[in-house]
Length: 137
Image (tube, rainbow, N blue to C red; front, side):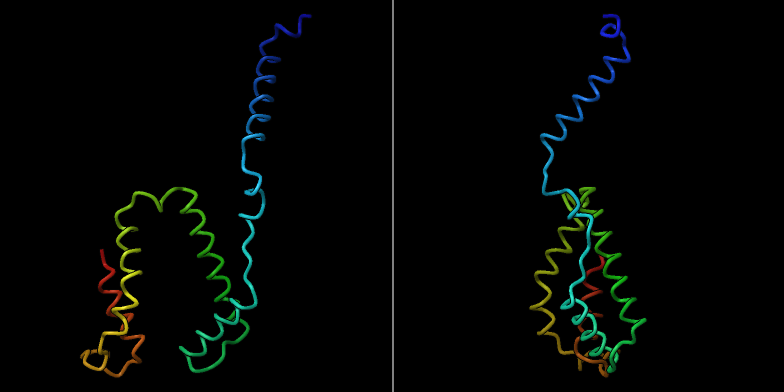
């Protein structure tokens, strides 16, 4: 059989074997679920509530769509960063995570009325401004 001596046949046989091996060892739970981003009704309600607290009015349909689009884009970037391994062995990410764990305690202990620039601002806005100064790395 002359075909068994052909390099093209060997190439195709090795390629097919690699595909079979990859299919056997790959994680079946990572099929299409990781590619789907689900924004639940509860999450949409959360967006609307946060918007209403911030702007003292409910969001319009266009504004709510923008909030959902921003969330989806953020989720896409997050998943891409994790897939690229950016979340591992990065000092800046470690510091930010440390601050995020530490900040909730600090947010409630800050007296925003004493802040000269943001004395008239709501407590949360003032604290977030001060927290953003801490987050500069």
